[in-house]
Length: 112
Image (cartoon, rainbow, N blue to C red; front, side, top):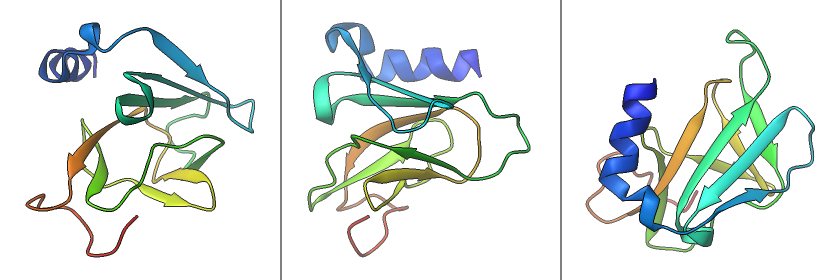
């Protein structure tokens, strides 16, 4: 996993995106931080075990404007947002990056 994180850091130039910002969440079990503001890189972690299942990260979420899709940089899965929350399919750490919807193979047809 650390190797994957380093590849993401290099690909997206995380060191030049600015200061790390902690983003408030509604649940003590979750932590969200980002670099590069609302359209930068978002990292979602929690203190649940591997077998926990889906996790909701509620609070401030990335901008989901038309024309853009958020994707986990490690798994390449398209992020799902619902009712002011990011819904992760499992409890593994997630690193969301913004991609243009047009031409992205994993993008759903409707805005997330």
